[in-house]
Length: 304
Image 1 (cartoon, rainbow, N blue to C red):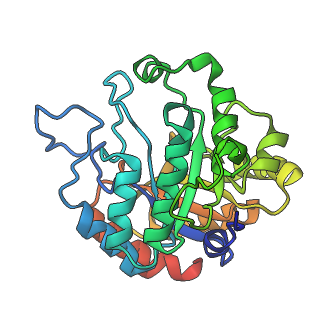
Image 2: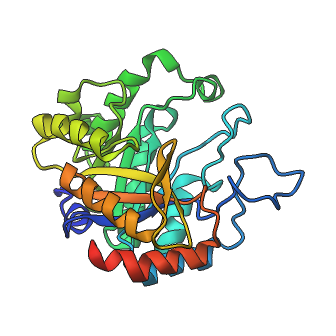
């Protein structure tokens, strides 16, 4: 299969590139949620306009969650829409954005269909897919899909073999998974029940959990030991304050600050070895259109 270099080259073209994590809704802090809507289910009515704004402003990538089952105990429905279906929709509504998954839960999905779905998105998006993959971390999902939580590591490895074309001896003569698109790069979210050495060897990049610059110094150093210069990606749960001089106030997985302190934080992450940061905006207290415009106008030009 063709080497998946093109999307990775675009992802890392620059000292530090910036993207967004979907859904584009600040539902975690809004007070106008309908009483019938559980916490964690975003309002997707403006999703088409917002993703077009992200594309127009020059963000490098948009990252989608894979949440096949909404569980109120966990309290997060992701972007609601099914992962690959929504990727196809986004491919037709954007021109330049890389489209990433963060991350497809491989043990819950039939691996040959994942390969076909990914190839379809690659063809429809003109090679803009970044296929983040994971073994999953919500035990309640597995019985519903007829899978074993305890054996998800082995299922993950098998799915990777299928996606990478390393299980093609199962195909009979003349059989093929179409379309014959470029294989998307694979990025693991965390270790996916594997050893660091396996992840560094078999994956094309790593989706690291959010953390401080000091956290990323340690993690990126470990990643470089097993993976060389393959991309290191992470995320920030951001509340961009209106005052550009507002200092950093840290919260779980991210921070609240004005744009000047945010730029200092991003520079520190760049120096720590991070190649790409995706902004998660569900804690953001300002209107997202306003926040995205400020990020695109005042922050992106210094990095992407």
